[in-house]
Amino acid sequence: MTDLVRGLRMIRFDAVTKQFPDGTTAVDDLSLTAPTGRITVLVGPSGCGKTTSLRMVNRMIEPTRGTITLDGQDTARMDEAELRRGIGYVIQHAGLFPHRTVLDNIGTVPRLLGWDRKRTRERSRELLERVGLAPELADRYPSQLSGGQQQRVGVARALAADPPVMLMDEPFSAVDPVVREQLQDEFLRLQGELGKTILFVTHDIDEAIKLGDQVAVLRVGGRLAQLAEPAYLLAHPADDFVADFVGRDRGYRALQFQEAPRLPLRSEPTIVLGERPGGRDAAWLLVVDDDRRPLGWVEPARVGDREVTEGDLHRGGTVAREHGSLRGALDAALSSPSRRGVVVDASGALCGTVLAHEVLTAIEDTERPERHEGDPVHGGAATVQHGTGPGSGEDTR
Image 1 (cartoon, rainbow, N blue to C red):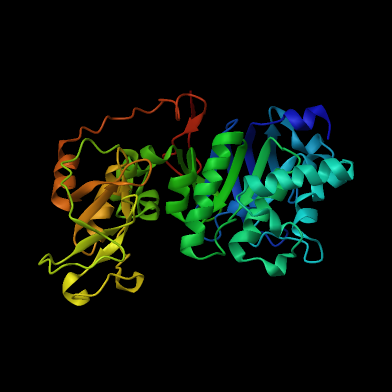
Image 2: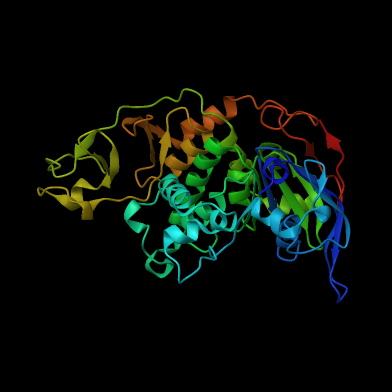
């Protein structure tokens, strides 16, 4: 990889169109910037050109018109193989080589770049740990891994040569919701450490809002409807199409960007797993471990005089973090079987509980600062477009 390719970071689409031989227009006059060190998410309904746009960046698909540049360098003038080796690429089903071990899969690009065996294996083992996989998985084959583990290997492989740019095409959509959330959290942790320029495709607006520094909503036919940071997108959809796509509950989603004020937490009676309820007349008791970390709720009337076991626990309620978001606090209260939201500190220990109406009062009392068009994304590193019509949007800096 040349120093030129290694250093390229910002992705820019300038009036990019892709028409296929049958006359189908997949992407239509797309202009947007994916800024350095940020996550730009492309989201929209089927047929809106998300994947086509992504694959034009590494020239797996060639644009019909317009230019795509990396830090001002036209990708059409670059060597295709060299360009692709400088860009990490993660797809939905990981795309691992079934006949190669996990370690050999991770080391694919370094080997193509001519790294020696020792350096390649050291880098592969380092990344195995970084993406949260146990060292003993190194010599296994993809078929011996779970779907979530395979996706982690796919991310590690994309990171192996330390590319400045990563393209990710619905990388977490093929796993169950619990594993998906874990992968998203791990991905955000990695991005916090590495600061890659990432173009991410998803059909899931919740995933887009959670992961994106900016979100580009595309219409069918590949026209840009709106490009904005998540909080602004939820609060100010450009038109009815965007409003419908982000969902009628966008006001609730927007609460995740508002830090919860000091809530009126109450002291919650607890019982340690393995203890007896002791004839307590409460409808629900919160079960904790020896470090006061919540494990779930129990109904004393159902347990009677025996010890509380794992099988007695109701685990349906979510747990909110102290100083977390208003959405987290409200969701904890609404999802709890006792209707008391559990709030924990940074170590996971119980702080207390809160009722839904108390969170709603806090929401009413919270002033929502208006974000004005032209304000920078997340501290000023990004250029954002706010589309007001099909494919519209002027750069605001």
